[in-house]
Image (cartoon, rainbow, N blue to C red):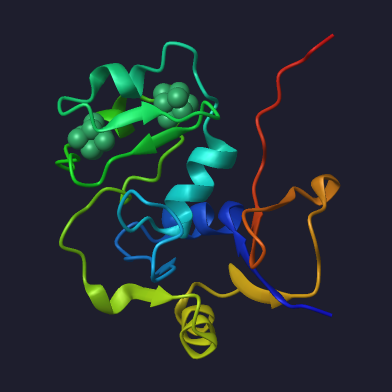
Length: 165
Ligand code: SF4
Ligand code: SF4
């Protein structure tokens, strides 16, 4: 049965709150899965699953460099080449969607792990706060707040849902 990497965004957020000075390790893929610069898995997961997709998104309006926009699926994306890490979008988001360390440039590259490499993925698991990232044979399971980011990554996160009735 194929193993997937589970990234528990709920526990990661708790870990950050409990230890705000800790720099979280980041998982990403080389080459990047997206064509818009290297994006960490946390950023991709946040805009996919945590963001409320505000209609008149204040984060987009406030960005001084027009680095944010919505893609064809109405997901917010960040153009890394335009972002100047001012964090205005983090501050103005009414839902606290983004973790405060998302857009810091010049971070320690030793904290970045290529998840397309099994050895690096294991190192990533080892250095993440205990219980936040692990291998699993589980699959997407909305009743457990588990969603598929891609074929290899599962994300545990509370989804925002709007009533359609
Ligand atoms: S942190 Fe980047 S994306 Fe956010 S408002 Fe500033 S420039 Fe725009
Ligand atoms: S303001 Fe926050 S919740 Fe709204 S679109 Fe931007 S990131 Fe998403």
